[in-house]
Length: 204
Image 1 (cartoon, rainbow, N blue to C red):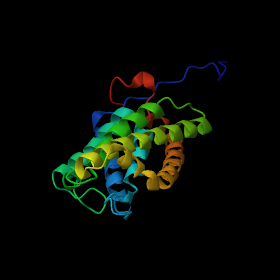
Image 2 (image 1 turned 90 degrees about the vertical axis):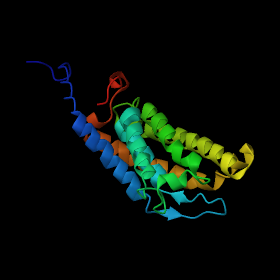
Image 3 (image 1 turned 45 degrees about the vertical axis):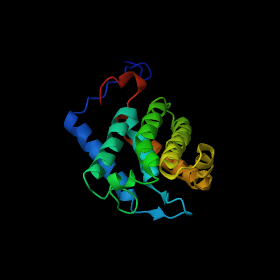
């Protein structure tokens, strides 16, 4: 009788490209739906939104490659006029204003979050912790990209633009915690969704 602890695990079946596209489209749609929630803050014209939580959730579950592509798809849809951003504005209009850095930063943060998330251990608690770290790093990347956009669009100095993100920190930390818990639960239920670092050479 073969000991179950030494029995090799069967490799997961590779998903078809159509299944990958469907997954990415589904998460892109989720990010769009989360744009329905927007809370204006101050005079900067940059509201508190849940879309960045959707971006983090997507990257934590799908990894850097498919997560990044899903976020890129979400933004691309807005470039053809579909109202996909917070306040139901198309991304094309959003990049014309002070939010340009935050919008394009979604892609960068998704790549960073997904890359870190793929190194999460299989133990549930450890996975949650790594997802939280990934999300916090992603938020920092988002702030950097957003600050560059504010400098370009409003003429603010970089330090002032960076400091202007301060009011968003508590809310973004809460969103990261929520996204990490949800993502860890999803990956625990469907482990094949998040590829390991060894399997990033091709979309899975």
